[in-house]
Length: 246
Image 1 (spheres, rainbow, N blue to C red):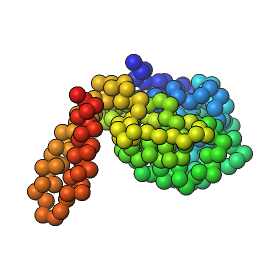
Image 2 (cartoon, one colour):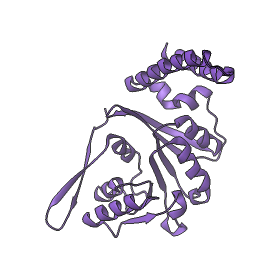
Image 3 (spheres, one colour):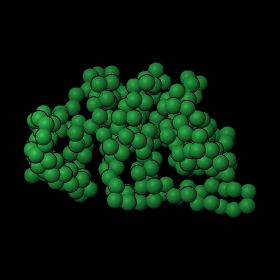
């Protein structure tokens, strides 16, 4: 059972302030190797970088976000936490904020859609040459993320699925390998490790997806235009789900 909350304490000039990592970020933190130099892409409030420094997990972290608001919030929190020498807050798109001198060994991209995550990875491949680990947490479209990882020779070494405030999140941990990587269609869709573990959260998610697909198929049958191709795709997914849940 994964701990539900992780407390990261940092000191202001006159008080101790406690910040709680969300459940999903707590799981992400568990997969960051000791002494990894981390880039947190889409850092938002910089809670994860502050936690990693405070707990002695990472010596240095780049906290990056494309939005001015999140960057301002991250800068304020990093300053209050007195970790400005270890956490570099930067504004920019995806991995473009990184330089070779950063020596990044672990990249975290959490809290985005799978399409955006793969776009960031695709655009920043040159920035990943020395990266030893990717920790990705797509809000949707995890199959798209797995497809990208397979195509670019990343081995998925661990996965987790959690229910946080009635939202289901998947965490995918991948390391680069030299050899070609292959995954079965069901592994791409449902996760190679998650399929093996078949946790209660995973089963519930796929049962809900199955029920939704049934409603979608009913709607497609009544559509005024030809939806046979879409219906075939949904039926193929249904067959995989039913086989795994049997």
